[in-house]
Each structure stands twice: as C-alpha cells, then as structure tokens.
Image (cartoon, rainbow, N blue to C red; front, side, top):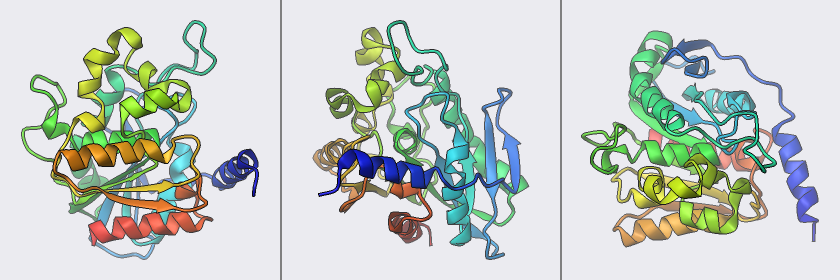
Length: 289
C-alpha cells in the first residue's frame, strides 16, 4: 500500500509544478488590490462559450492566491470554456498569537469580496471577455474556494438582514465544488486545515453567531444544481466533510451530486496532468452546455 504522506506530497508537487498562466484580460471589481478578476478566453476560438467562475482555495490564507489555480483555469479554457478567476481578500500573513499558520480569512471582507465579485462578473465579462455567455454561468472552486462557491450560490437563503443576501436565486447553471469545506461542524470536528474554519469566523467567541451566515450546510436548500467532486484519499479536506453537506441537503429535500474518486487525494482535482482534472471538466460541462 502506498505511503499516504508520500502520495500526498507527490500529488501536491505535481499540481504546483505547472507554470502560472497569464490571463487574457483582468478587471477590478473594487479598490483593493485583491479585488480583481482574471479572464481566460476559450482556446478553441469559439464564441458564446459557457462562463466558468473559479474560486481558488488555500484555507482562506494570504500566502495562497489565485496564481496556483491558473493552470487549472487554463485547462478549462483549453476545453472550450470562458473562465473568470476571482481573487478576494484573505487572512494576514502573520499567525494569531500562539498560532503556527497565517490567519484564515477576514470577516467580513472575504465574504464582501466574493459577493461583490459575483455580482460584478456578468458586466465585467461582457466588457473584457466577449466570448463568454453570461447566461450560462457555472461556479467552481477548490477546497476553501469550494466553500465560497457553495456559499455564493446560496446567498438568496442567507438569514434576513445579511448584507450579502440576494432577493432571488443567482442566475447560475450550477455549482461544481471540488473537495469543498462544505460543512463547518464536521470540518471543525476534524480540525480541517489547522482550525481554519474557526479562524475564518473570527474565533471561538464569534463562531456560533457567524456560522449561520457562512456555513453552506446551514444554507439549504438552494434550488441550484450542485455537484461535489472529491478524492476518497483526501486528507486535507476529508470526504466526510462533503458527505455531511450532502446529507444535510438531503434532509432539506435537495439532492446533491457526489463523485467520489478512488485513490485520489486533494490536489489532483486541479492538476491538469491528472485524470481527475478531466473528470472535473466533464462535470462542469454537464451543467454548462
């Protein structure tokens, strides 16, 4: 049996071995340097291609920005999609007192940015990526970005009074969440990403108050077609986190698609060299085309 740690290291090294791919265009959706969207045109030269909006992972921590996702978004562009890759504000580079890792996320700025970006993308795409068909938008995201994708698709069921709440469901074909941090309760139990969920919400004192506004498992049903793609051998965000979300959805009367890939860990889902990445593209295509 392969050593799990060696497998994880090899998968991560492969995913991060690809050079960053420059976008075809970029546009700001706010004044902060992190409030930017990169656009990638479909490489087949097609017009009116479905638009995939991608949200990168990295436990909502500052060292991990959208650059590591560029080989994946370029892979989607080579599969005929128009792609918008969203940057957003993350936690500081400095650990909290007593911590060992950079702080995960900013409250409320991380959520402010994702909401603002998703609201702005249709108009920005029309101006900067004319090949994009904004009537066919699919959200995707990996890990913490998978959480944000599920959350962005659920803004119309946020508690009343939330500044991010939408009056109606967003105009999406669906969501394909990749190894998402989809169920906060289960993620906290498992200590996912070194306690990143609790840090995202501002610490233990704020968790109970803020979780209803941020936990995708508390924002169901959405009425938005949703699929999760997950590696069974994922040790960064174990598949039981996504399974808990799917169970919560079922209890709310909603079916969530779940593709569990055998022998796969966390990073092959966004690695253009891995077969799992092709599976992700097919799941997106089923919603988009």
